[in-house]
Image (cartoon, rainbow over all chains, first blue to last red; front, side, top):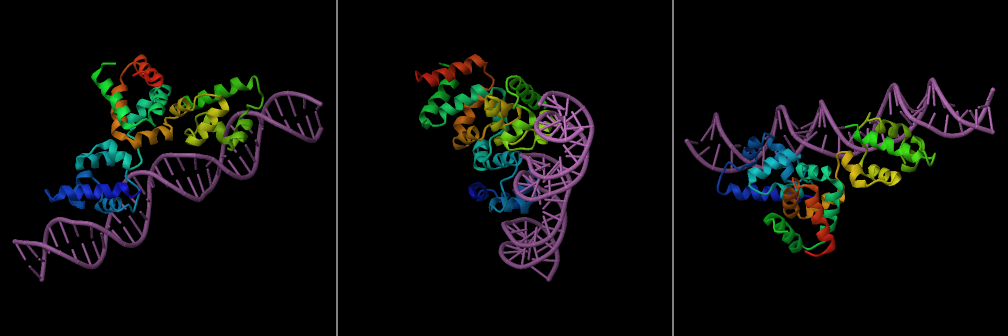
Length: 117
Length: 117
DNA sequence: GACAGCGTGTACTAGTTAGTATACAGTACA
DNA sequence: TGTACTGTATACTAACTAGTACACGCTGTC
């Protein structure tokens, strides 16, 4: 479960090589949280933060918010809301796709995106 | 937000017309919760119960668990896990579909189910 | 040698979640 | 008229979430 913290720390340190403001304190200040809290999050001493803080962190670190949320064991609330609006439809679709290989799901995503289906 | 409680109560009373064990006490006992708690849930005096209890309630009332969870403002943890495993893929797919009409999503569900795509 | 910035240790907390336990008044019915 | 069942009011709670506030010791540098 330290996956999340390790990832945040390594990504922050990577960015820091080019921009010294990517210190624990610098990032924490921009996010509006305490540096000691970010430090604990990165070391996995506490659970990952709230969705809002994770989304801010994703923007700060320039990574995909859905991926960072996933590392934190969460799913974006807008995706959840889409499912809740049509639970039978989305429930069946996701259960059908969940065990299919990536390339099959990707093909579906592309077909829907390109509108040729 | 009383949507959930109202639905549970009406469905339980419907079943009760054919089977008197569908009292607050009878259902609560089968679910392993206190009758006073189920009563409060049905009247919307407290927030909807946990996922586990809702799933049990759905089985008891013979309704779709995803639908009942949706009424409670929740999404099944197995759907969430499927998304967390491949957050970019599912994130993009759901965001593409979320504003499409039911019939379009349904067509997709059918195509995937029938495997002819 | 003081000042700024660094990461982190310690102590604390308001609010939420998901309930339990017990008691009480009303109804059915034998 | 007592027994059994009904729904509900009241009071309480352990665990969890998502943090804050402050202090400490270390390093660089002006």
